[in-house]
Image (tube, rainbow over all chains, first blue to last red; front, side):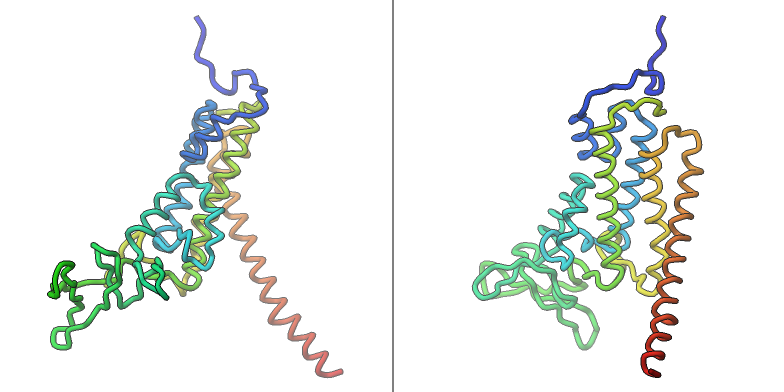
Amino acid sequence: MSTPASPSTLPAVREPVQPVAALLAFLLPGAGHYYLGYRKRGVRIGLGVALLFVCGLLFGGIDSVDRRENPLWFWFYGQMWSGPAVFAVDWAHQRHFKVVDTFQGFQVLRSARPNEFRDPRTARPLAIQVDPETGVRFVNLPDLTGPGSTRIEGVRPPKLRTLGRVAELGTLFVAVAGMMNLIAIIDAMFKGRAEGRSE
Amino acid sequence: MGYRPFIDPISLHEHWFWLLLPMALGVSIVYKAIRLRDMERYWRAVMIMTVQIVVGMIVLGIASYLLVAVYVQLLAERAAGS
């Protein structure tokens, strides 16, 4: 009766390239190594990349991932190696946390200012006003079909812009997560099941 | 206005340098998972690398401070004296 093989007892696989492992490593950090039989390594790679990614979003907010407006937009090309989660966050950021403004006849997607509310129906910015008597922040949401408006109280901008070092570090955390996963992708793709490597 | 996790930034402008700790830990977890041949002493290796990164950054910070605040000032004083 044969015992189940573990990576340390398996002969080294000498295939030059492991494209499936690389693809899996991109789709889910650590999955490439898991697929190759390195389960502990795979879980730990996933844990490390997730830690960096979550810390980036937690410290820097959703502004840490911004393909379009961030002055450090080119960092996205480093961040994207963290996998589909980065694209999902960027998509949600552009679609649900930005306002559509008109500038010289063109529609422009931009972050709301601290005194702007995002109209959930049109994504247009609306100026937040403060009631001088109660101090309540409100907007007058215009009716789309008529001249009237509805007052909504307790409003706030869809997100706060991240500035200064916290912005830099949030962006950097997610970029480091992407770069570390890129190393894991390359390792899974070219090293495969190397000789003498334990699980 | 209350803080919304993962949407708004944390107000850490005065204490941003503490963020080096989770970054060093995350880098070490991934790097050692790829680099080590034997996973026996994995967590020990991760902790050592984390400490190495943090100490290395502190040393670099001190070196940068000495360069700017001491050496460059010394050069400027010499240049002004000559």
